[in-house]
Length: 388
Ligand code: TXA
Ligand code: MG
Image (cartoon, rainbow, N blue to C red; front, side, top):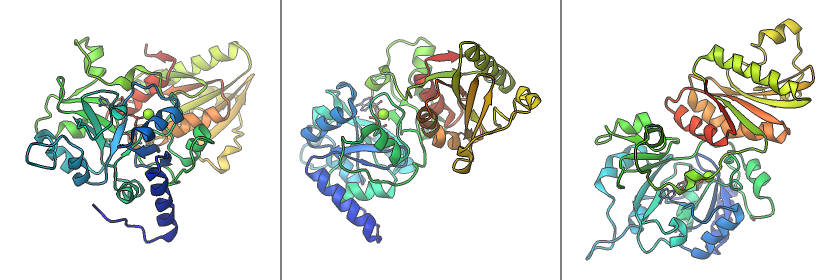
């Protein structure tokens, strides 16, 4: 197992405290390279039950088991006779070499060591070797794997800052390790290479479809939902998490899922006018780099001043008052750099929600690279999707 790399005594003492709590069956929040996780001992049924109750998570939605080495992973797999370590299915070998440690979760056969509370009685277990140095060091200090769903209250956008975790779970957990903003911002890709529909991406995420498809044996890689539901193929693979409402802020989310940028902006404008007609409102906008507000000709004609107080702290936020409505815009990033947008996505949704906007209008982006995961999360968050 890799050693703990922190020479910084403060980090090390916090990690030791976290490891102690985890060994006492407590749950804690930790940063990972994707989103913050709500961690507990994956081998302890009592700890696992606590995760479900803290998050208020439906009991049929299984958890990901996080390891800090391949050695730890093998020790958790079903063991062949006369051998005391399990074997990783060959099909994963090259993929693991390429993408681990990192934001990829793979389905593996479940052994008796993994409590059924983790897998919700599935025959497979989802496993991930995260790359974040804090996550790796913590698991390695514990000496046991950590089960960790995203550290949000069930149904809310996943946390990408420690303050998001605090907002959702204050009073319910005793420790949050603050590692700053998560680098990827969307959850790991959940990938199945051993099931009946394999190879298939069950949940798009940090490792893109394009990069997985390049691997040997992945020419026919499919994406659950896209290839199974849209094309009306029979039988969907088991992804229990997919049926629940997800990633939703309190405000109603309207997703403008139109490829043409000009058309998309016209639709956003039309939606704002429609909302305005229904009375006084605060509207949130999540848009790409070219600001919706400043690029809006109508605003320029009216010579609207940008009055954001948030500008001092958040250079990507603008707000205006126009007639009876107030518009707060959060810029996600450049649409040609979906990895930037992914990093800001949940933060932007939560930012607008905290400002009590009545609704959030989101500009969709192409489903290329990280765009696939982004649009997957936005479709789940939206209560209205405009794709005319
Ligand atoms: O990036 C991530 O994966 C984060 C960080 C904390 O590691 N974790 C995360 O966990 O997103 P969670 O619980 O929010 O999402 C786990 C997803 C769910 O959609 C669940 O249904 C699916 O993985 N899953 C877990 N075990 C599975 C299994 N055996 N078969 C199919 N899907 C499974
Ligand atoms: Mg989650």
